[in-house]
Image (tube, rainbow, N blue to C red; front, side, top):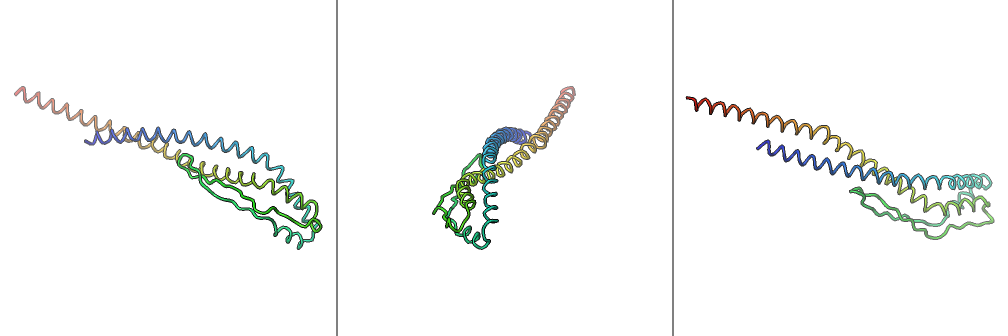
Length: 191
């Protein structure tokens, strides 16, 4: 009975190993596709952000600090709505940006650089939200890849070989008992 139980367990472990291996392959493929999209978006966005921040620094240097803060703090409204997507059992957040009132400022009180920085940031904001969503997805998928790889390795290198050894040991013991029983029966027949 123990042999039958171990055989079923070994077969279940092998099927689980195959399923986890397939899941790991799928996660790695999804990770690389999201990574490529993330890197492309980052590469596209980085020069724009450098330009926006340099204009912002110039604007703050050319403006009175108090007026710059007042102009900066009374900007338009934006909200980010969060939903989740399920990718191979992982709940990945999806962000949807909704812009409210457009940011406005008094052109006579602000510098040209401030206006350029503000319009550049307003244009870059949706891409920044997409970049944040891709970054979060990469972190969650990477965590799941590590966890799945640990499970696959535990099955492959620890549980399956141990169950195989136990099955072989029980088979050897059963065959030894069968031989000893046959020897006893032969001796009984001879008597």
